[in-house]
Amino acid sequence: MPGPVRVARLLETLGINPETVLVIRNNTLVTHDERLEEPDTIEIRPVISGG
Amino acid sequence: MKCRRCKAPALIDVRRHNAAFCADCFVRHCQEQVRRAIDGFDMIQPGERVLIAVSGGKDSLGAWELLVDLGYETDGLYLGLGIGEYSDSSGRYAREFAAARGLKLLEVDIPGEYGFDIQTAAATVRRPPCGACGLSKRHLFNQAALEGGYDVVATGHNLDDEAAVLFGNVLRWDAEYLGRQYPVLPAAPGFVRKVKPLVRLSEREMAAYCVMRGIDYIVEECPMAEGNRHLAYKEALNTLEQKSPGAKANFLFSFLERGHERFVADAETERGELTPCTVCGSPTTGEVCAFCRMGERVRGRDGA
Image (cartoon, rainbow over all chains, first blue to last red; front, side, top):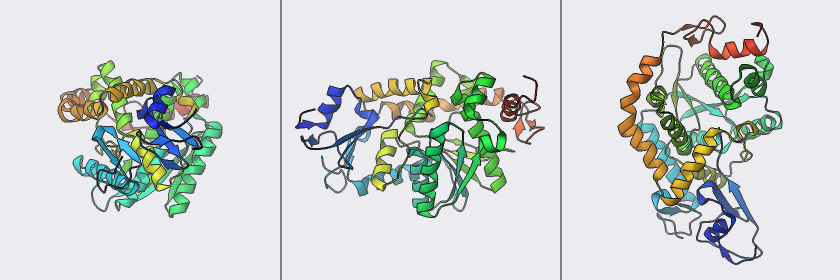
């Protein structure tokens, strides 16, 4: 996805409920207002477990 | 976003508290929530020995770390469920966590010690896999705690887990289960006290806590849980939470404060007289307890 884009906008575009994931940039957590840039590597990690 | 406490750049926002935190302040926030849960519900007394049920996931490993941080004498118990690569992998995370911190991890391997795995057991007794798994965990954690002389069993059930269970119980208006749903189940003859110290922390907070503390946990979901009702309840509650931050906590804690007491009598009425299981000695309403019955059926000893 092209940047820059804020985390909240990225999740909205992908249809992901922000309550259900962590967003991690270069091994560090980021808040929903953080701006992500083109070269950033982003992990969207699900946090919901079914047990 | 700035940390609510120290104004440093924040790493995690928690909309339910209308707050964001840096790493250090967030770890303190988690410790405070666990302390508040333990004290508020009289979960653990000073000097008591705690056995924590660990799965290799974020909640149980995070709970173990938090209990140790708060000064509790805590050993872990990992159950090998025989769920293929998932069990192999989750066991590795639990062992590595304990070894890195010099903590004691007990292990029970269900296929090795009881001759069945969860998937086969579930198919044999025609229960969903999560039902057979939950039954095995409740039985074996209690048994290990009694044998090891522990005062209390702690589990990693978090705010989302408890809200989802409540949601399911309310959908069915299951009065017996509503009467039993509480963050502390008191000790009774043959049963160790059970506590849920993460009841004030969400799944997202626990995952963030693990990332910030450098706790490696199994991120993959248990393959048996895919499509279960519990996940559907969580999805519904998270849809509400997104529109109305704090909805899950309000739902759960309003019930605990104002609703639970109304169902306690239903739970007590449903509990029949308990006698020792003729196989393992655990208290049961029948001759043989549900766990031993399941094992016998899987091994074909009762001709089923």
